[in-house]
Length: 320
Image 1 (cartoon, rainbow, N blue to C red):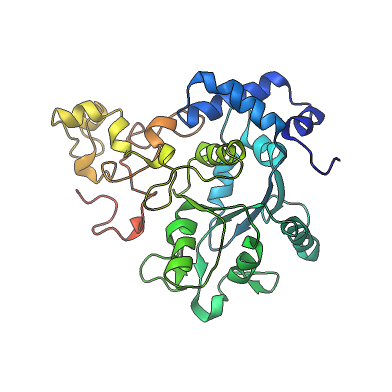
Image 2 (cartoon, one colour; image 1 turned 120 degrees about the vertical axis):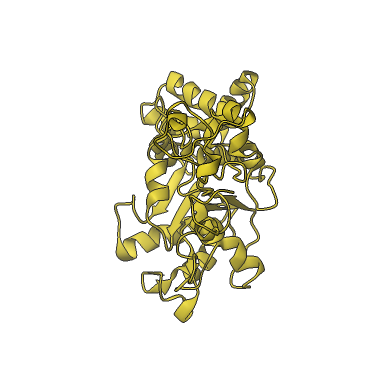
């Protein structure tokens, strides 16, 4: 295999057609809210770009972030992005090697620098990090080693971004998100841009779009909000595009999940919906290949892309 293998060269060897490739580029443009005129630019840029090396590390997590990423695009499954468009050199759940062979793959990939580090799960500090260990080393130690020379660091899921469930009260393992480790705990040092992609789990197409943006922009981070989330996906609250928005404006609210109002699609704000406070792309990108999102399916937003959503006063069903 050529050392500087381009994306299109690798895809062609894998039997991926030009048609399938263009379908993926179309979906990527749509997820980033780019005009159709950008598809040609995206396809040309991706075709000529070398496959970025990706190291995926898992800390205190449920594997839900990896699971959701395997269930994205219908025409061009995200497995193709992970395994064909990028060089996924290390992933605890998906890789065949284990033990010393797996660690050898990671060390070989990070040796030249310029790689992408994806981390899902929170990082525990209690008992010197013993609550999350890989190969006899704490995940914090492995992470610090892996980010040296990296071109981009992605904190995927609420746990990696903000601490998530492991960091909820009473936080028995002293769990933290990546940005917190850098700026408040002084336990981690990185020089690469850090992008948070929160959610429990995050929308798979969001990670896809961020990686495509990274390739197109030659390693530059997209525009981010104050919590380091990409504005193209987290720039507005889910309430703004909710299918129940008309009922909200007309003051029609469901009083219980099975009353007549709920059956007619009334707003779920009085049943604890956090859509007015939650920045995410659920109501625009949707879930399960564009099928639906929580409010469309009859359940209020729980705010899973926001910090401390597990510890919100009153729980998920308390009226704002």
